[in-house]
Image (cartoon, rainbow, N blue to C red):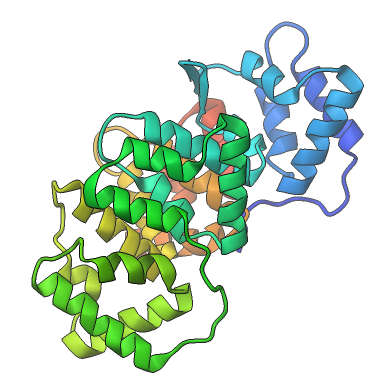
Length: 321
């Protein structure tokens, strides 16, 4: 369930005018920008961008880029936004930008690639691949293959290339058989086994969850418990992340939020990514799970760990007025 509170009827012309006013004069009225955009769904935000360009003959996104500061930065021409920029983009375009930013970073973290390939339905993933191609003139699969190697490359290319069946129908016999194959591969430490990658990248979410349930019944423990934890091996870390994401996305995102907040310093990139990408999907349920597992409301944790207009934007997307 979504946390964003968007009225059913809005005047996109008035919204465009309010945003124009917020960007004029001395300084930028960030609160006015948040008040408008933080309460509009993806379709409404798209209409606002189009009307703004028709009236003022300029791109609203570029105008906001030039106006907003403090939680925005430009690196090699690629905009890395913490909140507003990512929010105003169409969801497929936003995920394309997030994927590109992650692929160009050094290191072996593949959260975005796993999240977009394991939590999106087939049409959404296809839309992201099209958006990536339109924006960067290269295919997402090509980019993943270029920036990764070995078993990590094989797994991620297979995941982002997938077009899974998205129904609820399952094959119990197949689930039992493939649960056994997964167990044998894990037991023999053959984590890059062809069957492992094939099963995770081709089976429907419902079928995979049935397979994971069979795994637990057969082995007396969950598949994630049998995968090595905190491994320095890039592939194993990515594999574990993918399994967790496919097995229970809400638990996965709750953990990402918890890790982004706990400890010294806040991982603003992860915190923003989860709130922005899930606000129109299932963030309400993720919030409830966070509260249950951490004994503190997510809104309160965000309020404590962030500040200023950045905090206001996140709290607005969390449904906190």
